Each structure stands twice: as C-alpha cells, then as structure tokens.
Length: 243
Image (tube, rainbow, N blue to C red; front, side, top):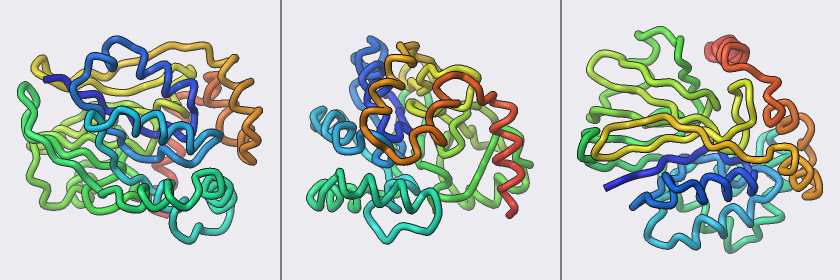
C-alpha cells in the first residue's frame, strides 16, 4: 500500500494538478488531504478535483477550512475566508464542515499514523522543526501513534520527540521553502519520504491572479517565487507560537 499526504493547498489548482499528475501520487492507493484546501484562488475547483478521486481521498479539516465554512475571524483571514466561501457555495461548504480533525491509519512500514493539520486536538497550534521538545510533547498530548503527520506551517520537517516521530509534509500550494515547488509526503511499505514536485510556478501565478483572490499578492507571490526561506518562515512562526 502507498499513501500520499498533500496539504496546505490553499486553492492553488495548478500546484494540486501537478502533484496529482506526479506518478508517485498518481500511483497512491489513498490520498490524505491534510487541511487548508479551500481558502485561496480556486477553492471550489480544488475541492471538486479531489472529490473526483472518490474513495481514494480522505479529508482533514484545517483552520482555514473551518474559517471558510463557519463565521470568519476579522482581518486578512476573514477577508480570504468570506471570498472563498462565496465561491464554494452552500453545498460544498456543508461537505467541508463535516471533515474530521484527524485521520488514523495503520501503515505497513510506518506504523500507527495519525494525520492532523496542526495537532491531534486543534487546528491552530504552531509546531515547527525547532519548537522545544517540552512544548511539542504538551501539544501532542496523550497521542497513541508511532507517527504524527501534520502541516500548518508550510515547511517540511521530520523529527523525533520521545517515542513519537513528528513529520510536517509541507505545503503543496504555498510553500515557504525557497522555491515554489509543491511539497508533500509519501508513506508506505518503504517508510516515509518527504518529496517535491516541480511545476511552472510563473504560469501558475498568472492563472491564480485571474481568479481575483483578494490576498493573491500578499499570500502567494513571494511564496511561489521562492522569496520566503524555510529558516525565515520557521523563525516567524516560532515568534508567533507563544503569542
């Protein structure tokens, strides 16, 4: 069995299509969408594309998905969520509202694996590759899994905290990695691997701009042009973690 974990797509349809066309993902028996799918330029199209996979896809709720289908908060996320909600429409939004916080699977070659967006109990806490171990243990709680796979901070990492392997699969649609290439993870009999899919990010930016997403420039341009490094993003998230 082979599993693909793709998350933090943020309505970036060209990035999603590139990953799904990647043979490593196309051959996966199951695709787990790790949250933050439907806030961004093409929320409805991204959802429709993944739902077309039928039983091959499982969805997890991210904080941006929740904001989109519930009452949005003030500020940038509220603007983005309201815009995305209008494009989803009520039927799609109702389906998104039913997504669970976690998915657990027993995976050969990996072990008991819990998929979540941020932590097993919430879609908002920040865990980075340099978050102190005590803080990570507290955030993970009494998790009964060999591996926890998360997202939320848009930077890939693979670290061990006590007996738990904590993996961030990275971001498909808005990576903070010094390039716009889509980041995701493969899990299966051969273990777990963090992977990258390259695609034409300049052409993607042209397509994404045409969607009219109000935060296109603030959220996507620097990321897809590789102007945000993993180190910068990690430091920024850590500064906000205790705020």
